[in-house]
Length: 417
Ligand code: GLA
View 1 (cartoon, rainbow, N blue to C red):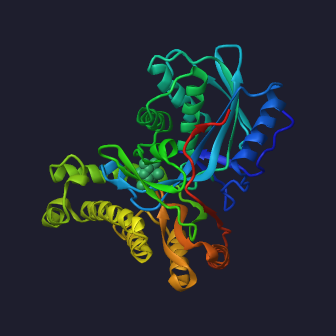
View 2 (tube, helix red, strand yellow):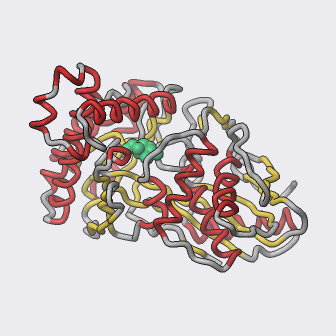
């Protein structure tokens, strides 16, 4: 098995998400996409003694605002990040596919035909789930072997699992010489996550990995599934991601519980989703809903409004307003929706302390919560010093090394070869 690098950290798999054994959770390596593709090609050749016939890439995402709104029919405003899952593959003999997960140093044999049932969740489940989706739609998947690498931090709330799913779907499109409708492709990947990873996620992550474009955020209406690009091409403004490098065990169970609470609130209010109620209607039904579900619904209704306001403010380059909305989003996720944690709150407070004077526009937790990352908008010229201050202060107060990196909105999934 020589010739391919292993990331020397122990990654364990827990409840369908990558979890780490400690503070060094995120993949330490970052490589530009072209170099990542070269490395994966070399690893493929070392393992399978051949050149890959196909190479595909699918990015992770960062959500600027609109959290826990997707499964409520609301709006989200994510961008693809320039961190990718890359798969290099070639045709093989036999009745299965052989996959090398180069980051975890494991190989898996995957079913490509017949009735495919979900098994215990491992990194290969996401790939298996997408293959199952193609098979269920009548495609005959030929046997193949492949090497997978990821520069999307694993388990950091930046959609590493959606990136694996969307990369797999992109690979199958290349192998089968077909092109799915992008929305169908994203939905097929979401279905894989539901059925094969057991996570009842919304549509944001898979839509972002499929549909995002460079230099833009994507305003996605999760009810109609229509999206509009909001340019973020101003080179003076940069997205800074801070990975808390903690992941609390609650993640999947609490996510499902929040989703159930929102659905219960919508049912009490006799609407299909929380998208369909106004703030006034919500306040009038406070007693009916009960304290907890009322707070959950208040987050969702407020966050949907904030997302639309932020998209408008971004388009008008009203940065102060964008910042205000990001902090308000964080406060609501912390207090009303209760999906933040001490480490995320600290990262946001540290950014807030640096403030406008130091070049911070706004900051909030991003993704499902209970650990993972914050997203901040910062002035490009100050990005490096902001990252350094946050890194030092976070370490001083928690003893944990965070990982900070900047990104520009990147290109969605595509075939490289
Ligand atoms: C996770 C889910 C998404 C979305 C976010 C919260 O990332 O996969 O569908 O619900 O949490 O906004």
